[in-house]
Image (cartoon, rainbow, N blue to C red; front, side, top):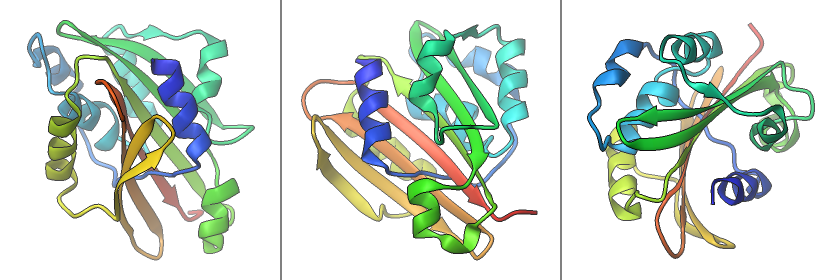
Length: 197
């Protein structure tokens, strides 16, 4: 299910993003046996991008298991990313897959925002296990983002996509939730597009 979710998300060409923030990595150890996946997504991805080093530091401190190189390609946001890493992350009794990639802006994203030529795109994804209720996840994402989505429940093959977006002249921010039409699980993503410093 995870590989299908990631492949379908990448094929959709949707780009997600969020403003950067800071986080106390040790707090992730105190999320309980059945943590809220949106909270996990916030701690690992949403509050971190575009600072990929902070996510990598967290992975070392909390002993996440690195995924194999062949599986990393599913998280790539370009053919030649400047940073690409992924881990299987156990929080309580739940297992999540995290993928982080950073590259020079290009492709669909640059076509939508040509003024960001030479900029940087950073993306962080969390693939959820099959324990997650989709309706609750979307409600919690709405609370996290704090604004109405720009599109909601858009059918894409076996999935429905909800996207939030925002930003300014120097930064574009999107957040994204993809849930299966039937069943549980899903994928959460945040991507940030920055102009060249």
